[in-house]
View (cartoon, rainbow, N blue to C red):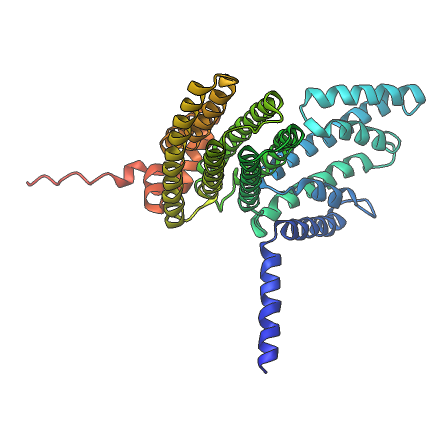
Length: 425
């Protein structure tokens, strides 16, 4: 009996993980939307096999609500434009090789005019498919009806199966980037403390340059998360979440750039001093410890950026502040040692100073006060731009988010006014 309960618990946990998997949720949403669109189209379209409706629903249902709505509008516009062009050409010239060329050219031009973005080829495809059959009853308009059915069903799917929020996936990508940056910092510090040849130091520089590709991948995941927060009824502070993640990635990008500069400085220093060590043993050990401490702070910063629960965020912020204090003390010790080294030997003094300068830049970017100021500035700017771009939509959204009594008071202001006192006769 216990084995059955354990197996049931494992199966339940597996199902719950699948429910939380964004890819699984998206596959279920797309399949359901396409199937429902086909069933509806069978009853409403004159075509015997109205496959345009499920195809449209499949293309319209995107991984985010914002993308679903925008794709619905663009696809409907593209199909309607193509059908209108095809009907006009069929009435005037019919289907010939030169009319086909003209209709393709005209459709592509109209597609750019109606701003259907990636659906510009869809205008020409719809026009070509309809051009040969517009004389046969209502085939052309059936394509419009099927497209509308697919678009409406795809958009309505979000009311029943909520689109996934990709914030967790983006947060995992940010934390993974921070950990890779920390590992590279540790390896750079180990080489600075030893007698690594110039070729190995240069290899670390190439690794630092490859972090740019990781930034691109994380940026794509973050853009998807930002889209999933737009117009999502399950998210109350979408703008705040977007700004927190975006500014966090910007900071990590700056850190990786500065780390690349440090790796380049050490590579130049290794070429100048070979076969000697990069630094004196004591300086190398302190620099190794400093880069390790900064790497720990980078990971704590990423955890702080991706943490939602307030208590966990406070713990992450406290840990980050403590690690920055420790790194600052080590930085001061390194600065004193480098000063004494330059006073004894002025060779490559500018490279020593460059290492210290870049370390200061990383510590300044990770500083909690600097981050707070940046967040407030970006939040004010984002709120202002949002209200200036869509003032009516923002007023409606603010009204929807109010409690019911306040909402009724805004819609019926006269009913919330206190009754005038009765005059005594």
